[in-house]
Length: 419
Ligand code: AMP
Ligand code: MG
Image 1 (cartoon, rainbow, N blue to C red):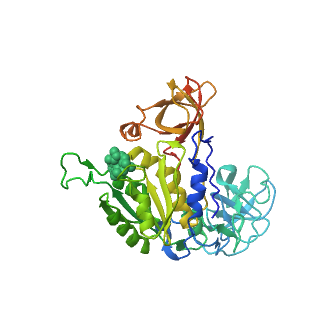
Image 2: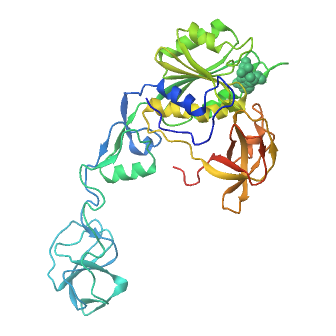
Image 3: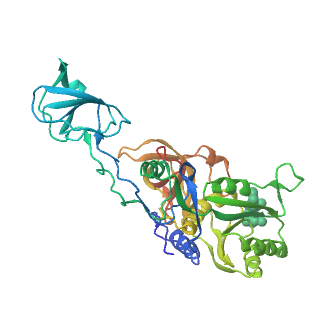
């Protein structure tokens, strides 16, 4: 599968043998086969799921001609007296016919009687002696919503691969659907590796740390479209890891591990994937933090090995894990939202890799760009700077110096109008 999500940041590595983010994402996506199983899900609960196949409208929208305002349906033209011959309220059955000198008192949403030429708002008309006189000659069709003017029967409503949200719930419900046909949930197994890791409350001793990545990844994976299996913490033992991977590959679409993908003595993941009968396709990305990352396949399952350092793990999941989930679901790939921004700080750095750092927006530059401040000293193991951050800032690989006002890219965590 070809990735359409191009990462809009100059990420040409200055270090050899490292893949760019775009190449890594493309490779990761190319390992994914779109899931072809589907299910019907009641509509409000389908938000977050990916539409399977194209959805066409069962009804025209509006379903029938109706009034857009509270007022009077007029049978003819002119600034003259129309005899009021009836009342239509929302929910009334379409009925009757009005003559050119007749009117019907009508409420918003009520079907317009046959013969209606226009509807005048009650604020724009005078009523006396059982007649209504519009204040002006109301143009033909005014305030009538015509059947089918928004959507025709059988018109395409939602394309295959669309991630559903409140807009789709509304449109599909309005056009007659109770359920959506969606891709089945993606089955993801998550595990951590490391002798030093403990779950909170379980056998913490000297030299141990709390397993942070697994709960973090489970939170990142928390979606209607994903079913996560927590495989716990596995010791730095080649046999134990490969056994776990092999078993997980049987009934998962994606296996995500963290730790053990660097080049240390206890970094067993690459060997474990091979020992489990799988293959490794790539393992180093030209970014900071997040360089060590393993991509592969074990049987039909896609394998994603994320770095142990929590910030690196977080960044790599957002950059590579998210597109993998989209590809497995057959969702239309969307590149992350990236904004042009300016630095509010100075920074001397070693050039070489595209670098991400937690930052927040502290104002607007003279040119109108968001002004960014770092939220702490960056470091792949540091989590505290993330807490205050509005998103990730990025500097290009070749950059050695940032001055206040320098150009940066900004990847916001939140979209306040987000769906
Ligand atoms: P590794 O990639 O296994 O060499 O780990 C790199 C660093 O990340 C080490 O300091 C590990 O202790 C730490 N680390 C690995 N996995 C986790 C985890 N699940 N939670 C928190 N820290 C971790
Ligand atoms: Mg380790």
